[in-house]
Image 1 (cartoon, rainbow, N blue to C red):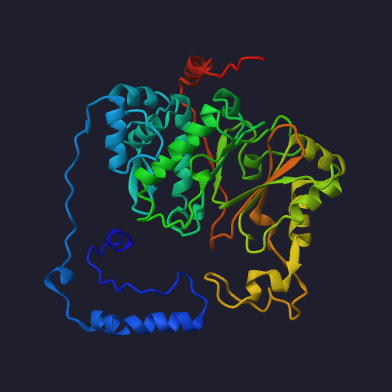
Image 2 (image 1 turned 180 degrees about the vertical axis):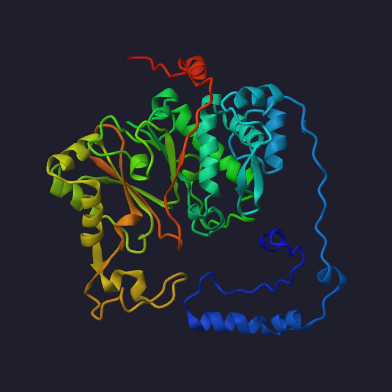
Length: 421
């Protein structure tokens, strides 16, 4: 798939049996030795006519209507073609897509960007089609368009995260005005099922990455175990209850603007506080950092935890610096002290001479964001990953259509009403 997308539809492949990212020299040499003859033959054999002048397979332009049938038949048809995510879909009928397009002033054929790994053109209409399939509302369209813009940024590293064996998940943080307008949950159970905005926005972005970007499981997406967060990892920032400036303001946007922030973790932990004072809260974070998980990270704390820290004079930069400075492990426990291990590089400046000398798990405060969210309780959250070289948090402005107030009013009453016992 990768070679074809880079203009090499015909490429010679020699399968081998060396384990992925093998660090055992004997196993690597034995595996390579078994196929060396085939490798030499593949390198030396003259090119065939097809190899010398490869031709891309021309694809027929599909009809706008690809299926007619009932809901069960529709879902089976789409699932068998790999267009779904394993859960039932809603049919992207012409009328439903037109209604979804009322959520933006952009024309349907406007290309928001090209999504890796197969560089599919993410038009506004294609975004709307996937949004309908995910059960989204038209009020989510501005968020989804901004999300696609974020995915297209080189700093997001979608091409690497979307195809890695590491099972990374897009993690979306929504800020300011649209939070209440579209009811993105920033309180209790924000990342659990039950909120249509959090669930459908995350699900729609997953379908967009798969269907437009072309990151298909076991073909381009080579995640070893996969990640349940790929169904939906969407959370709002509780700015009203935060003592600090919000995330999008940190990223250079005006406070009154709406924005969405993206990064790709592959691990998420909920950690019970070691104590309810500032020392206990901060110690909870530094003693639960995982060696080898030193990439982009998000420290999630409840409004109560945030106010406790702020009351003792802690700012976001101070918290980040503290976590980097004191979140350390003995060198022998840090991946950089071991030979091999895939992306691991042994550097003198990161590996002290003594195996007991401390090594920072997250080496740079710029790799950390602090998020105030979640409901009442004594738990803290931590989303992290080992990171890709050159990756960063990406924040994009959410542009609202001219009919925004009318659109919000149309869907405002779509909220769950739980029966009281």
